[in-house]
Image (cartoon, rainbow over all chains, first blue to last red; front, side, top):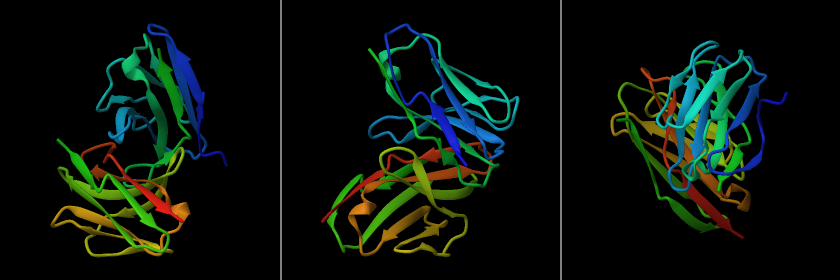
Length: 112
Length: 111
């Protein structure tokens, strides 16, 4: 049982480049989330998807787009990367509200 | 605006010590409070608390919630070097779809 799988684990981008972070869960969870984690700031929600076919903005959505491709997969896209998007990105999922979230191993992204 | 504050932000202790980590929150229509342990990578779930005064326990770790005073504590007794990690507190509101995380407490346990 893999849980939540994120790819890639590491990425270096030049300013202005685009990329997509992939996330898949095999727990049949309804809700999925993308967070970024910066030193001293905890985890901040970028976007979430409460169910297949729906997505909503979180606390820091600017510069990002998401796609809930199906129940398993939730991708995060940076259209034009900026140095301020250098961070560690975590995908998470839970079955529904009021249940704990399970996290992927994270993607360390550096934008130069 | 929903807010979660943790203290201390950093703590260094020696093996065998007991530590108490604090989490206070301001959230509209509180549903639950969760504790996670984050070592090198993914946060891993420790506890979910929804009711005041009921202690949750797992081995040397325990946690309790006070919904009147809006805080929770996480206790670790007889600490070991393997307890070194960042401990994250998160709160979920009934009306919300997501968890609001605090900045975390970085615990270092020295041999």
